[in-house]
Length: 372
Image (cartoon, rainbow, N blue to C red):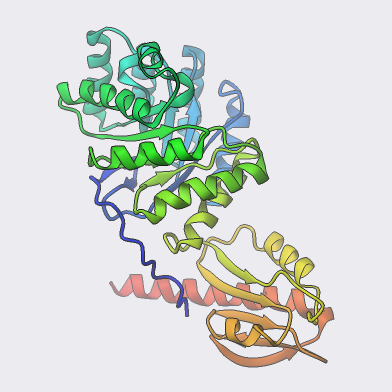
């Protein structure tokens, strides 16, 4: 059914670039990414974490490459994973040149921090020759000293001026294959900076509230800040920065996009907070279903409502729904009341229905693609 898939948001028109095989900007879906927090030189651990991120749905993964030894490890990692990889590099242009040789898909590097023009040009030429994108990443915590003196403290205007300095370098070298981020831990500063820069350039924008906090507080802060920008139509890719397992960043990122109907990936659960009217334990049921179906990436709308007050109305709008009832709960399929189920069998039965619905949907989608 998926009646909820259309978003009323009109996205900012941006230039389309490619990071590996993933389009960023233009009419492409908003990409969700995270960053590994393993020691990059520990190849097995880093590959394992990248695979976990991909399993959660990551479109892109960023890897820190702080040394030449890490660059060599990056090459081994690159050979073992298929997801596009972004190398996070600061200052040393030789590291950027080496990972370019080893198959990086995007360089997160600020041109103004590399040093002499010949070094910047060497990196730009390597990126141009290999069709490697660049991300300019401006951060309130690492503004140039001259801007700190000029503004006294980080401001949205200071972030934008820093960004334009780096962009000017790329413009002089006729390189437009880049995206940009302007991050601060302060929501207001971040939002103001993105709104300012969005009017000045047409390159894709990577969104994030940097150092947002732990799982709960960081999720709230990121949801507010990113939500404000996404509602404005600003944003082509995003990362939710959490002091938590990076897999959680991917989950939260997709949940933000799903709530705004900007991405339709995985199960969209509609569930009541529960009250004394509930005829089954909504919270434990939802937690169990989310845990069992955590690896599902196929879009599906599922309602879990504990009573008949709001249950039927929600269930009629989704692919599958449960409405609490006495003595038995009512299952809805494609918006229509279909059959009843007792509490003792509810979770197992509903999981089977969801998995069957997903299998049917994937079969239907593959048939359509084959005909095209």
